[in-house]
Length: 393
Image (cartoon, rainbow, N blue to C red; front, side):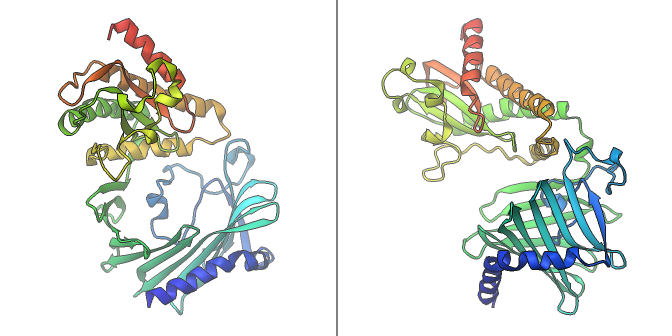
């Protein structure tokens, strides 16, 4: 049954671009729908979409743009909505990126057949590309299954509910032999307070925790620094055993989600010729290293960056990154510097640890970090070499 449905949904996804403009035009011309504008993504048919994507709104957020003071065209996103006033249902959402460049989503509500539907496109100067097709099915008035199709394939989420709330879900991908189980927790007032997901291989991920937006970012960064020094050092000593000389421990990160990083160990045999003959970009690139935490086969590095008590800090820093408007260069540069400073302090502190029970250091040994997208390894290399000379390490 599911395979037939998946095939129908895939076929429909492949045809979205052919009919979307006509459907959107009809909604835009419907005089019974009111127009609302907001800085925020206020609607998706997937239950708890904002919590699952770490995009919850602050308690004092003004949801609707009503005056010039409510919107900064240089920094804020702009969403247009078409709403049925009586039913309070959205039928169109459009996120603007400039003249004739936007994402649009159309919503359909089939109450008799107990499902809601949405389909989305990206439009750039008249060129339309399908991005998403979703179905939310209900049973006895509560969510039962959510099916989503994108260019990367189809996923199925099946919910378990009590009389009022979603208690858990099972997330599956038809083309892959693994799944996730999500557990939802509520406070006595019925407010969602936590979503924890367990992957079929045993990994546990915190996807949402209420109240994180009230935590001070400086305090969170200090917590992450201490974790990356103390906990990761302990894991290296416990889990890592490399017989040949090591010239670096390397943390890699990106500003989209700056924590946790990946980790790699550079071994001397991977360097052709002499160390000095190579630029930092050749020496410090984790995917090129055999001892890299993201390599599955063989998995030679088994460092766990996901103890449950640190995962809320990851959510906070990812949300902080996401909430900085890409147009705000000053705020972006400040945040990039804060993250880089954390990694520099981590590297400097780890330089003083004795890892002799796990590996032998070469004369060029450094603990290093780099932003994988910015490729700032040369800058951090100079900082760490200066520190190494000053401390006589």
